[in-house]
Image 1 (cartoon, one colour):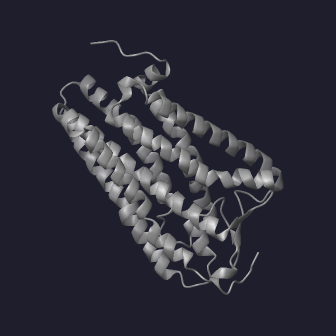
Image 2 (cartoon, helix red, strand yellow):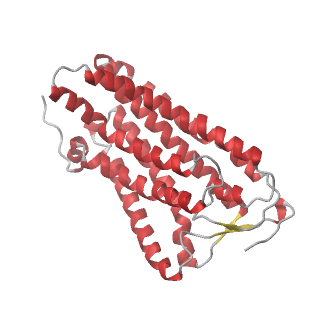
Image 3 (tube, helix red, strand yellow):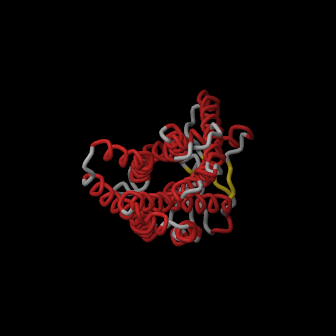
Length: 311
């Protein structure tokens, strides 16, 4: 559907194309997304409930609780349009609602990376400086780290989203995606998008993705070095086990984000980016509570309402 627009005030709405145009796939897609969404919400709510247990009032579970809140919000922001489109049959989204969705999705994605980097710092202190752990990772430090992540997360996407908001010409009102993401919206603009593409790449490469990636990577360099210095194999295995859940989530999220956003240029197929986006917005938030709960005895104990035996 091609519709030339001459000024921004004439852009009243976009049309979200969705995951597939095949009418026979609409109901199965709806059921699958609904199942994933409900499981994601229930799984992350379970983690939040478990984190209320007294023996889980630790920095690691404080950040894990933040991660669960982010996953719930991110899934709601990105997947709700698929569900409402099927129920109402209306694929339209207002221009303002599209910009708001773009902003919150980008903010939550960046925020999740920052929280994961804070969790990696917590693991670094726990393994590399165990005697100083409770002194370093006190309530004030955790609060400052989490507060900084939330503020930074919601500020860092303002420049690219603000630039897209100022676009005054679009060659089409159909967005080839299942939500308002920045790359598909840039793709349908008939303006010169060189500046916003460069801004988005720089913003995405440095403050949004690369900075938390480097912080996480450096933390694990020190963690691995400390683990290798442990003399017993059981000690090394135990130390690595404390990081394995976090490391698994980090690898999954960064792999999908690099495929979704940081491919060499914006001319690559949107279909492949849509698949990465679907995995990122549906599978990763679903897997987070599974990874942490299934591999963690403390979480299982909290869910079973069993307190740890006194030493």
